Image (cartoon, rainbow, N blue to C red; front, side, top):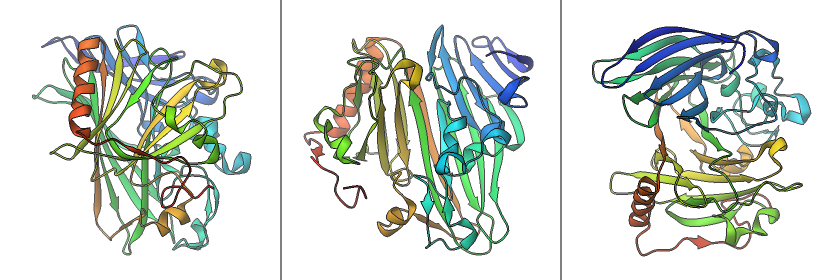
Length: 376
C-alpha cells in the first residue's frame, strides 16, 4: 500500500510474532482513509474503518487474497457520489476483498415507492454502509490469543432508518483466517427494514481458468437470460476474457448440523483455495458473481451471502426476504474467511462440503424463475 505511514499499537511474539498497526493514506482520493493491519505470523488482513469497516485485502506470505479493481486505491467516502452514473456511483469506490451492501437496502438503483419513508425512495446501488466512516474504533488483543479491531457505523437519518452496525473483526494467533461478527441494531422507535449482503471478492492468483466454486446447495438459478447461457458451467471459471459480460447465480445453500454453510473457491490444480463460512439462518441467500473480464477491467468473482438476493428491493420485499427489524432489536451475523494453502487443506474443505450435500444434487434451473429472479 502506497503513501501509508504505520504506527504499531500492539505487538508480541507468543505463540507467533504478531502486531496490530494503524495508518492513514495521504494522497489523492485516498487521503484520510484510515487502515488497520492485523498480522499474525505470515498471515495478515487490512480493515478500513473509514469505509464502513470493510476488509481491503488479506495476505498469506507473498500471496494476496483480493482482486485488482480498476479503482486502484481506496477511495474516501467524501469522493463517492452514490447518485452519480445513474445511481451506480457506489462503483467509484469499490475495490475491497469484502464490503457490506446495505443496511436499509442493496441491489440495483431505482425508485421504490413502497419504502416506509418517502425520503428513502430513491435507491442507489448497494446502499450506504460501505461509504460511512466508523467511530469508536478499538483495537483488540486479549488473553485468549484473539487480535483484531472493532468499530461502530451509524446509518441514521431524520424521518428515516436508524440502523447501527457494531462490527468486530478478529483472528486467532497462528491461524490463517479471520471472523467478522456484526450486530445491526434498530435505534428507532418504529420497525425498519434491513437488507445486508457481504460482497466478498476474489481475483488472481486463485481465480484463474479452471478455478472452481464448490458450495452445498439445493437450488441454482440464473438471475438473467445472460446468466442462463452458461448455467450448467456455473461452478467453473474462464481465463480473463475481453468483452465478457457478468453472470450471476442465486443459490439456496445447505447447512451442517450446526447450521453452518461454506463456499470454497479453489485453483485449477486444487492446491490453493479460500473459503467463506456463514450461518444459513443469518444469511440464507447466496449469490455467485462471475466477472471474468480482462485483467485491466477487473477480473473477479464474488461470493455474496446475504439476507436477500441482490434484486431490486421491492421484488425482494414481495418475496418476504426484507427483514422487518423491530425497535431496539439486533440482528447478528457471523462469517469466517479462511485461506487453504495446500491440496490437503483444500481437499478437507471439499470433503466437508460433500458431507453437507449428502446424496442430493442441486437442482439447476435453466432459466430465471420466481421467486428468485425478477429478470426474464
